[in-house]
Figure (cartoon, rainbow, N blue to C red):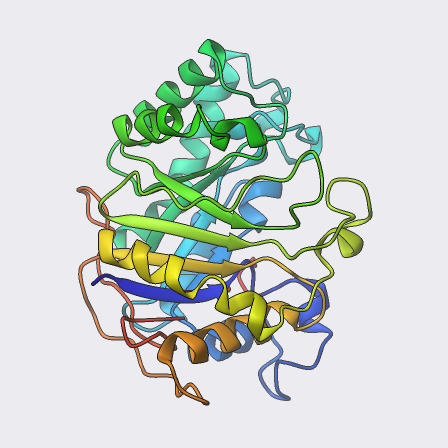
Length: 322
């Protein structure tokens, strides 16, 4: 049985910081991360989607977290074909993902930015969340192959946001494509009432890692403001639906990351706490300190693997230097 790590898709989201979840005396950059890492063993860094990660921040993150804590780093927007603001591009380069020279330069900066996490054994995965217009086809497969080549030796997870990737009749080919590149498929929980809704399938495409991201079940997904899209408080019954799915994933992979992206106030951390308790099978969940174990990745190894705030199979969230 693999480990189940529960966390959230950021620890620095403005709504979370303003919610009061962080206690007095631990609201600075260092205090927030240390407080979070005492309660969960994994967090997703979403700031790396909006701006290239820095080596300094990665070093600080590794220093401020216990052995075994891991970071899932979201790929920079340009690397997944999303629109990118010129202001965040390095060296005045144009935000053009089809320009090979631009891609080479951006990939080099991104790799340097996450290297301290890899070196410290703290890189849980690099998440490639592709845009809704990234559909199955030859062009998409070529793009995935190029990503796989550039990330050789990294733990990589892929989330598709166009539902056709996982529709009946296509899902098997999608699984085979990701497995061929050694990429972990990301399962999602979201509302199922929209044409853009991605079905809650749970394919296993890597023996090392599976990822489940909970986006909330707002019907404003894709149309409303950020707050509208992610405003959802998960009930225990909604989380309980996922218990058998998550446990089956853990039976087939070394590690499962369960991450909550319903980032309104403290909704994500509360959902992560509830999921941990449900996975533990008891009325309360007592966080346990991490222990060092080898992480689920090809050499160069991402290093130790966590254990805090996990389920009994093992269990344990958005993120700058704080």
